[in-house]
Length: 97
Picture 1 (cartoon, rainbow, N blue to C red):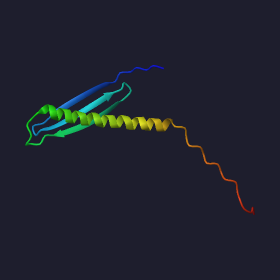
Picture 2 (picture 1 turned 90 degrees about the vertical axis):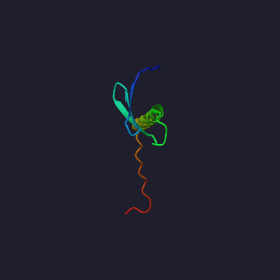
Picture 3 (picture 1 turned 180 degrees about the horizontal axis):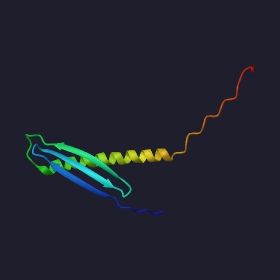
């Protein structure tokens, strides 16, 4: 059985004047959404190269999103598992009173 779907991903990056870059990535599946977050902090002694902060913050946000997707998949699989069978009572042993 073939299955094709398309999910939309929106990534927003914001760098403040102190060199902190924050990333927010939103995954819209059409049935719900997940949001991942990431932060990168430039060392004040480092050269100001915004692309590096963008890459780190975005990568961390995507990693967070990926972790959430895997967690959700595991929970869904667990819910689909057949329930554990009830333990069968052991026959009584010994003298009956």
